[in-house]
View 1 (cartoon, rainbow, N blue to C red):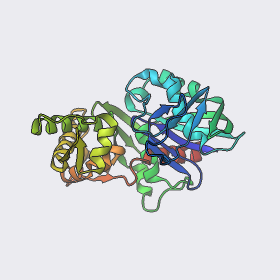
View 2 (view 1 turned 180 degrees about the vertical axis):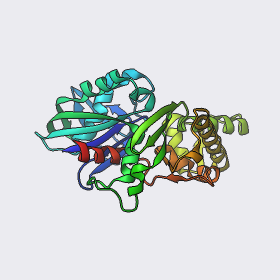
View 3 (view 1 turned 90 degrees about the vertical axis):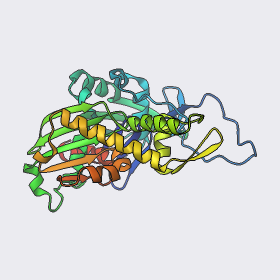
View 4 (view 1 turned 90 degrees about the horizontal axis):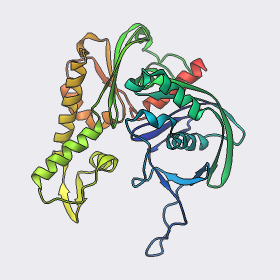
Length: 328
C-alpha cells in the first residue's frame, strides 16, 4: 500500500488509495488520566485515541502541542514519528505493509542527513492502537520529496499516474512553484520536470498572525486574551469577529490588512531571491496559506501567468501519493 503523508508546520495531510484522505491540525494532547466530563453532564464529542510506545493521545486539538518548529532536530524526535504513524494507522489494517512518500521544506531538503533522519525514524515495524484496536504494520520504504514538488505532481498527474488532459505541455515547461506554509514559504524552479533551483523564505502565515496582533493592539491598546499561533491563524481564516477578554471585536478589515502585508512580504522576498514571475510558463501557488491570501494574491499577481492550485492545503500529500504510484 502507498500512502502520501506530511506532518507539516500546521496540519497533518494524508492521501491513501481510493477516496481515503485526512487533514487536521498537527497537534497532540497527551491523555495521562481519564479526563473529567462536561460540567453540565453533557457528552463531549468523541475523539479518536491513539496509543504508541506507551503514550496515549488525541490529535487535532487546538489546545494540544506539536513537534512542528523550524528545528532540524524534529525529524528524529518521537513526536514527529508519532504524528506520522497515527495518521498512517487510521488507513491500514493489522499486519499490512506500507510504502510512504513524504516531504521536507527546501532548506531542510538540501541536507541529506535530514532525509536519513526521516527514513530511520519512520521505517520498520510499528504498533499503534487506534481506539484500542491494534494496528501492527511495517513501513518498508520511505521516500522523501521536496515539498512543493508534491503540488506540481498533483497539478500535472492524475492519481493513477496518467497526465491530466490538457496539461501534457507542462512536462516540457519552465514552472515556478511557490508553497506558502504556516512557518515558511518554499520556492522551487522546475524546467522540463527537472528541479533546477529551490529556496526557503522565512515568511509564512505565522507572519500574518504577528501583523494582525500588532494592528489590533494599536487599534485597541487595552485588548487582552488574544489567541496566538495556530489558534489565531484559524480564527482569522474563518471568522470576521473575535472574542478576546470578554469583548467582541470586528476584525475583517484588520485581518485583510495583515494578509496584504504578508502577501507583499512573500512576493518581495521571492523577487529578492532572484525569481522573476514573468519569466515562467506557469507560476503555481500552493500550500495552506494560499486560501487565506487568495484575494490579496489575485490583485497583486494580475498580468502574470500565475495559478492558485485548487485544494492547495492537501496538494502536497496528493502529489506524494501520485509519485508513489508512479515510482514505487
